[in-house]
Image 1 (cartoon, rainbow, N blue to C red):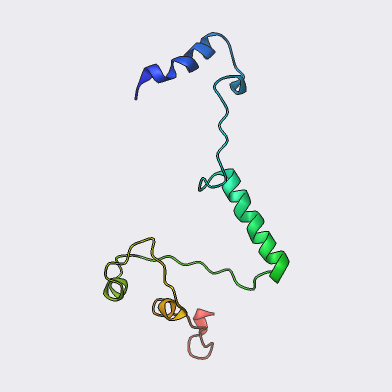
Image 2 (cartoon, rainbow, N blue to C red):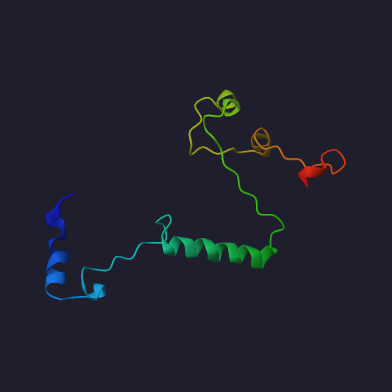
Length: 109
């Protein structure tokens, strides 16, 4: 860490400036900056526009993928993290879900 980078901050404290808004300069991140407040607001507004157009969702499903999963490595040699499945058949190779039968497995419900 370079202490000389903080000289302006030290000068402001010594001068008695306690209002942080008067020190430094304001930087506004664009909405394309992932994780920034404008980005989050843009995603929220997009989601609300979709709900307004086609209605509220019945399910909210998320998933994660381990790129080192043996089944994944076997099917997609040379597959990069940014690559995405293209067809529904590609997706079906990796997604499996079932609704438990209450008579067979009553604790699963």
